[in-house]
Length: 321
Image (cartoon, rainbow, N blue to C red):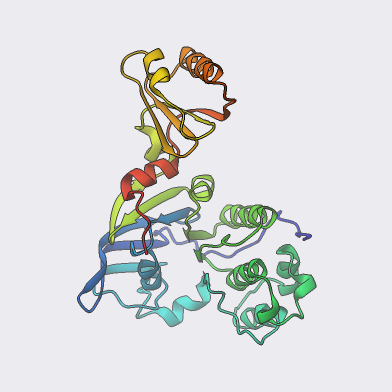
């Protein structure tokens, strides 16, 4: 893969002082099922908001309403100051949409799809430049059905970006990508945001959300359960020390060696968590414990909880269908 330059993507924004996206009391029902239940959040211009939640939480439905593909049952949504359902024809040239399923015709060639979308835009990017940047120039003449999963993902992103959108909707943009392609996409999104593009991102990769997002909204059962910056969402957590070792260690020895008020657990096999008034002596005690039981700890970290830990506390560890 040979990406192009990321100096400037030269996206176009309207300069409006209004928020790019406002969701107020959004309700969306399917018969007797309420998929979204009074959801409210705001996305400011030139920011990236990560919309997080387990399967069935209402993320896809929320994004479909914001994109103008579904009508709210109640509440109000404004996209670039317009109603995405009534004004979807006016909004379509100003919004980029990346679907996880791809959205490209299976028999079309990759380059043809990007050029087709470009012809529908008033001031598109050069399709060849974008194909080159996303490492797709070598498969530009390849039918979509013959592309790998990662190539289809990058093609879908190219189709969403080529029209110079003001607002970009991304559904799992790095799903199935290798590390090199994932970092390339991250760089591209940072460059787009720096040039004024507003981005709504859904992802199951919590490290991706923590790395890229200005704001995070966590939803479950169609409602907001937490919202704020990544730092805000982890700020009130208890200091922790984390380390990795062989699973199933008898932690009673470590608990006995630590002062009163500490909590020691193994949330997942082989990953250990020490919570309390973490200091240098805590690290020394943990290392001494590991030496006594004859294990070599790895990935030793101290600090506040990560976003994925906060997310699991809010939404639970149960696997959703």
